[in-house]
Image 1 (cartoon, helix red, strand yellow):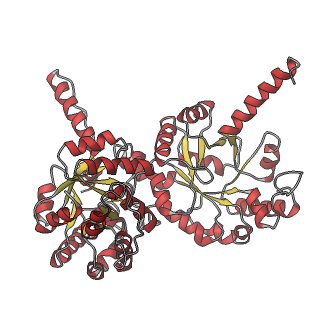
Image 2: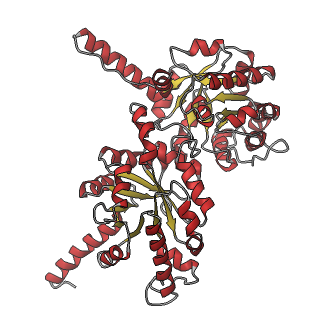
Image 3: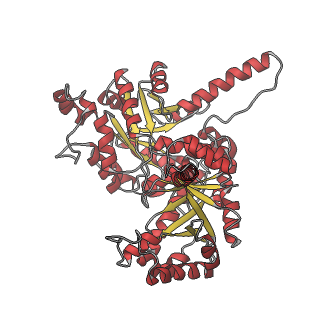
Length: 273
Length: 266
């Protein structure tokens, strides 16, 4: 799959499930590809990655026909340039607040005249072996994803959605709640209302809105119009399954169960709602 | 030891109560040994040293596992860099070359959640992969240590406003850069490397110490075996005693010299 097909999938409303990469071992990324995910997003926003690790993780995904997406740490064209030239098909930019922020993100991801990306797609074009194909298709393929996680972005959403080249939004309810003076209260009616505003406005202009979900709530998010859906991250899956099997074995021999929090989404929902 | 306890000690005006040191090397064994020696807090120097980001993940986790407070000197006053360090578990951030109150505010904002700051949510390693998220969220604003390096004469001139910025937990003096900013460059030939002994540098340092003391903001500096008592007497609240590679050089060089002398091989 490539970025253009991925965007098509998101736009068609066909359910699209992906997951997060937060660990550094290429073997983990390979296993996540083997698990059947067709797109994965590396969280290079909150987690520090060696630049070379990103190269190898992106190359692993490409070699397995999985769409590599990267959430970068800042709306910074120099960072975005490197990640695209490594072969990422999409960039997610955190903490967008204004149409200007959105334009800056789009510009960094596109070549002139539309954008300001410089030319040097080395790993991305298989070391220039596929350069003609890369240049003729990447403008359609590249996926620009904006994180909507501040009330300013909700208030500026009409203008943000008018920026040409915005391919998808993703919800960040925790930071959104902080920005509304309701720290961590992601189920507060005001926060819920802001989320509904985002979903409704984006739907009118046919821009997909994604979010992270758990096994318990992914269906209700789908019903609210969320697509794509992030089903969790590598370490959460490891924790959950390692714990589930341990508990299964302990139960079989009459030992007590060990409870774990497998994701921040669960922690947030279960402890604060 | 955590950040909140450390700040309390620094406020007590007893710099000998808890001393720190610098980490400049990438090997986790060195960090482990520095913790085992008895340092209760360590500052990783990512300003002048280049660290792979993943190395920082490893060594910050190692310090946390040994109850040593991990502090990181970042290379710039940049909220995207600071965010990653905090989410990896750093309890303190040192921001270099702060010159104005505006810059001080920017550093504090990057280290705190809204409404005081603009830190985004995602403290993964920092909350033991969300296992301790309740405790982390409830305590981190108290534990977080924001330190500013005062190493430019502009900062000295703007110090009253800088000290008024809420959330500045301490200052660290940078005498060498301060001397450059006073027009006293590296010695071109012979003598000492820096002109930090010049009266106007020392006067500026005393201004910083006095004003910080008056504002009850702890002020720290790097000391040596020869000068630590002088600094304690001048009003310094916390000190670093050196860095990993210096300790290796001093101790390694010391014994080599000693044995060479004793065996007549010098």
